[in-house]
Image (cartoon, rainbow, N blue to C red; front, side, top):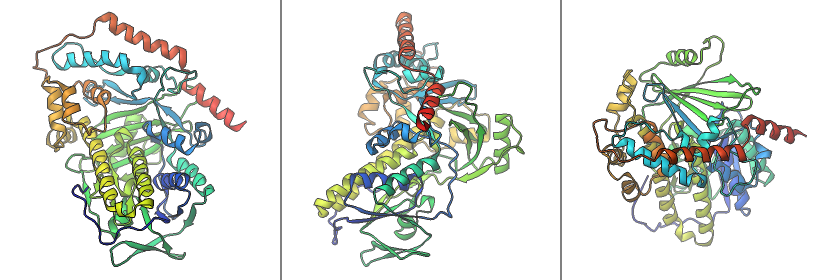
Length: 518
């Protein structure tokens, strides 16, 4: 994505009165819903073809989605039962070092301030040579909630807000947002896109459709998925692949049955396999399951066989769906009078469930830009460059964090793991960060002063690096770990919060569903 000085355009953008969105799905309808809520003066049209299907086997989110739905005014009671949704406290990572060990990446909140510091002390002691491994699981409230199959949504008031994400059916969530947007006068056209017409300035002037009249707008949103029909095919913004840093380019998915009479996990599970990793996302209707892998090391048939064997099921008993992933980002998300969101803009493998977060941030930044353009169209180019810059930092920051999962792995048991841990190019900004941790340096100082634009906070970096037990085993400069009584007090405090404020995940979801249909 472009960085540089502001150049005044010869033809500054006029006030945006009409906006067209090409593509539905979760990204397109998120955009339509949000803009129709906060820009009531906009004439918004969304074009999608019902002939283009979506997989929608299950999806996870970060806590950002909670904020997004609250901004729209859609209560959990209104959307979660319909979308088969469950609460998400974080992600378990299993076997990423090839030793069957698991660690938990929590959602950090202010309730963890004191107990997290105990974890930081112990993690620093371990990386500098202390004998005892220290995972993050027991030092964060969401870790205790996940361990006990409790919902991260508190049943009684707490001093500070508890953060959590969701698991949900992506197709159903898109439908909820579609209904919301249409109720706010968004025009919906079910038709096939044919071509875009451009004017003398290289901007898009209208969209030609197969059966309907052309759609004219002042500004266009490209939510057409990997095809990137406007930002890529029409305006020629190049796609920059991340293939040298992230090898996974394929996925095979299935839907496994869910038993609502047993304790329901409140966490995503990510288990490393021979050429990638397995995800398991618990919904109320099923367990969304899939294998993200590299096609350079595994065929489709081999991926099916390994997935089935891992789950102890027969390949003949399930329906497999295959997905090709285009991992990378457009050179710019906003070009001329087009802004790309969702898969048309960027995609990083779903290891940390960041896709919707990027989409959400794109929409928020676009919304702010539209408001400023309405009062001062001459700011358009400055806003465009700034938005592209923000998205550049966001996408590349996520990429760094995802790469760190592979760069810190000790696995060498397959050609894939030897490649991904030894020959994969480590991002320029990531290597010094890992070196600071590995060498026993002041990691916090490096994180804050040399890597200030990191998308992920201190607790997330510590959870990953300590959870992976990433260290130089020859380093022998240990610092003191936390005293045992302090360690025990931290665990006891979090367990007391669990028993006082939280209830079984499955009980809460059943009550929500029952209340929703009464």
